[in-house]
Amino acid sequence: MVTQTEFSLQARHRGFHLITDEIIKNLPPLPEKGLLHLFVKHTSCGLTINENADPDVQTDMGRIFDRLVKECEPYYEHTLEGDDDMPAHAKSTLTGVSLTIPITNHRLNMGTWQGIYLCEFRNRGGGRKVVATIIGE
Image (cartoon, rainbow, N blue to C red; front, side, top):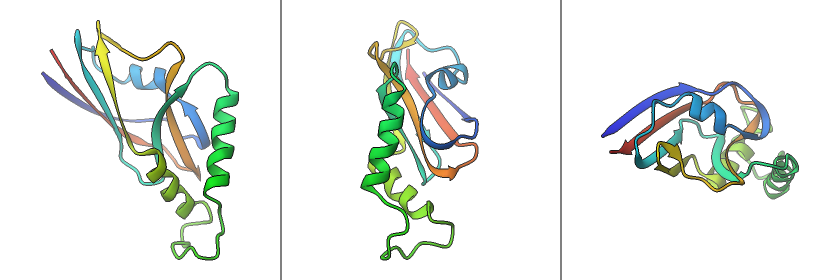
């Protein structure tokens, strides 16, 4: 069985945002076992899995990425869409735009402290479109 659905996430400001519940809410019933593949259809945000308990992780991740890829570097040529745009593209490449998560007993099989993050790298990225593909039996 393969099922695919596309939905939009609510718009968020720059940062690392836990979206596990929003993802689950938009999925059809999950099979007994299988895989969930998530793909975000944008080049200035990303998806990752990280700690879901301490909100300091979200703040620290944002600070780390902002130090790794700075705005307003003099060597950037792609600058017409704002100071946050080219750095957002680079950060998206670092995180990636897709995740694959196992499904077991009709649930996402993630660790106790794991959550799905939208990594929003634009100051105002807008609603992000996600394609969810479920492969299972």
